[in-house]
Amino acid sequence: MRRENGTSCLDGQTTGMALSVLAEVGRLLEALAATGEPGAIDLRSLPLTDADRVQLEDLLGHGEVHAELAVAGRSEVWETGYAGAWWIRHRGADERIATEVIAICPAPDILKAHPDDIQAAARRIRRELEVAQAPAAADLSETPLETSHV
Amino acid sequence: MSDNQRGPRGPAQTPARNTSQTLGEMLAERGVSRRSFLKFASYTASIMALPPTAATAIAQGLAAARRQSVIWLSFQECTGCTESITRAYSPSIEDLIFDFISLDYHHTLQNASGHAAEAAREAAMRENAGEYIVVVDGSVPLKDDGIYSTIAGISNLQMLQETVKDAFAVIAVGSCAAFGGIPGANPNPTGAVPISEIVTDKPLINISGCPPIAEAMTGTIAYLLSFGSIPELDHLGRPKAFFGEAIHDRCYRRPFYERGMFAKSFDDEGARQGWCLFEVGCKGPVTYNACATLKWNGGVSFPIQSGHGCLGCSEPGFWDLGGFYKPLSTAKGDPLKWAAGAAIAGAALGVGSAAIARSRRKKALKAAAPATPKALEKEK
Image (cartoon, rainbow over all chains, first blue to last red; front, top):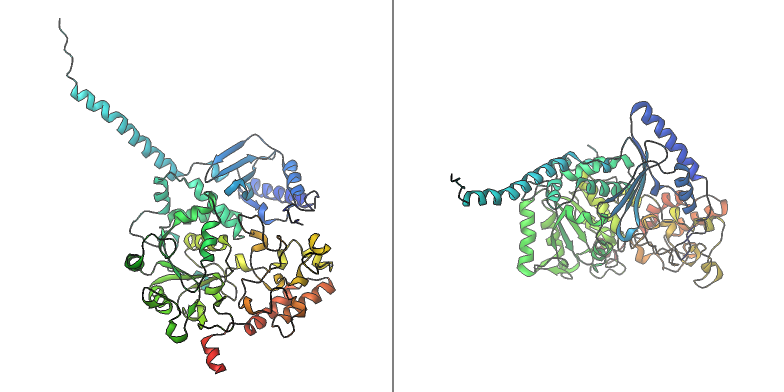
């Protein structure tokens, strides 16, 4: 329940939602392990209080990977204490949370470089090398070859 | 193919511009990576209540699409809809949408004016025939041959008919374009009508609100670009993703309503405690919009959170529905009394009113429909 100042009188209370989400994460991890099928839970669509969110983060914990991305604003991705369960937090304008998803997969797509971006990167390096080498080649052509005098 | 998939093409064939570059290629040249597409897609999927796993498909659709030509027509309006879509953002994930579209004509935003402006509209129509989107805000006056609003020497009606002729789809943004709005309020002196009364042979999406929530406009455009089809619409032609639930159903004050705890005036103890605003005129039970979930100004607040009841601005004829501060339950002769009766019954029985109210809403809103030229003729 949100107060006029934007805080909530339920913010300090847990509702049990965190345990429900944890159970859902468990089911999705079992499916991933059995069939390889990825899954996701959109936290923004769930009626979580601030206390629920803190409890869920505590229950899931933090694992070995934590990444911060500068992609159209800031994003944070970390593997929870359960391998294959990733917490993805995208921030929008004014640092507010735009979306928050728990992704169940070996690695979130947003951490991987897209094949098109990889191709573009290769092209860019080639162009940069061409530019970098062009003046050197020109210099060589303008400089008379040294001859050795015996 | 269902009504919701009547677009002429899939994502890979979305609008051809005068360049053959896809959005992915075009933005890559500007240093925008596919990760940005994926982040934007996650955001779009979330606000449209699509499965989170749909984000990958949206990102692929957007990257493969061509930049979408958009012609924005402003008729009898106040520019509030444009303010909403342009002022709600600071540079970040949300405004990537402006990289995905080419706004080829917009009175307020474009640099060109006069003949040059009209030439831009005609060029966009010619170069993108059958593939451009027309966005309209404002209603169209029909009385006295439409003399009450003209642009470039032609009536709004003439400009609309001319522009939508080769459009792929039309989006009516704001309650004026969707339902007639304030120009169409009684006594409707200009004979204002909504776009749906004129455009009958093109896919038409209504995004109502006074103004609409920015995310409802940008999310719908992103959906069109990603999937090349129209999102699922309600019986008033609005995307269900944003207009599928009553404000009341998702209102944080709903528990007070269920307990019968109402503010009686704007300065009483109940108002200070944040109780339900039903008795001071809140139209939340009969208003379908996403204000309670997406909120305004980047998710900061919405009218009820700021202490004022919902005006019902996204519903047809909201200006004539019996007074903003008149409780639904006491509006005698008010067409909304049926919905209000359902709400009161729901409170008494401890059950939600929305289901009952929804079933009676159509009848109520029909009775509250704004006067049209046809209706005015009948009155004569």
